[in-house]
Image (cartoon, rainbow, N blue to C red; front, side):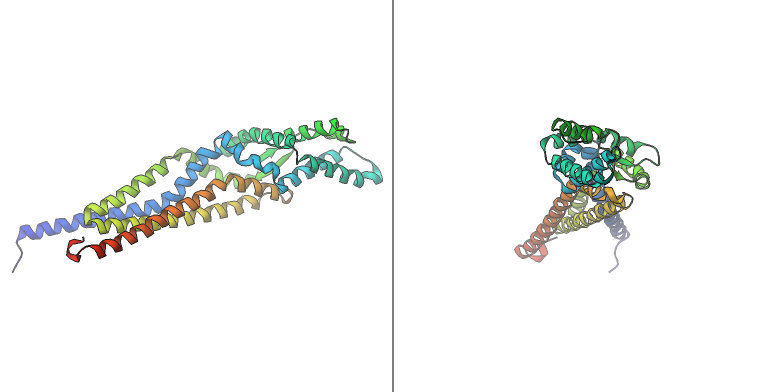
Length: 306
């Protein structure tokens, strides 16, 4: 029995709509896979890197980090010893001054000075990321050195008054890497939190289109697929953080590398937390949708389940 032209036309139209919906769902899923890491990075730049209080809160605990304390002690000692010439006693005085400064880095005064230095450094970091090529991103330790000098002079430490208070930098991001990252940071700034909003919208669209087009089971399958995309996005984000860390530290001088690594790790801690959150959400969606689909299949006759 031949089908009528109208029935064939309706079937063709239905197939075209189905193909269009399937293509749209596929495009939305690809966008989700891209948007998950992009939205996390964009929100991180907007909420932490560009916010002075959050930036300072992230790096303030580094005042207790051994690598940071050692770097500060080394820099202060080297700057002071350039002003002192004691002949055969030079090494003895160097060691004494270094240990005295290292001891100071464990005090509350040092922690306050470190916070002050980083509050000032945040403006320099923001300016460097917006600035011209060839500019490195650094933390100026002059406020820390000034506090060290005041405390050591007050305590009567020999030669402490000869410690010069001048710009002394820890390089966090070399000029080459800063140039490479500037355009990316600018794009992420423009994005702000909107990629995260778009991610949620696309999630709803993917699941909604699948549910409307083919029913509950298809909606659950789409939910499971979205969960897998979130897991993939979390993995991509973690890889980007790891690769970014390696690239950033490649240009940092060896003398600053441990301290720079501590700063980078502190600033990206929220990103690493986001990786686990997105991974957990994705796994929950994936497992939950698969379990719900299995239960739905068992609980209803096959003819009733779409």
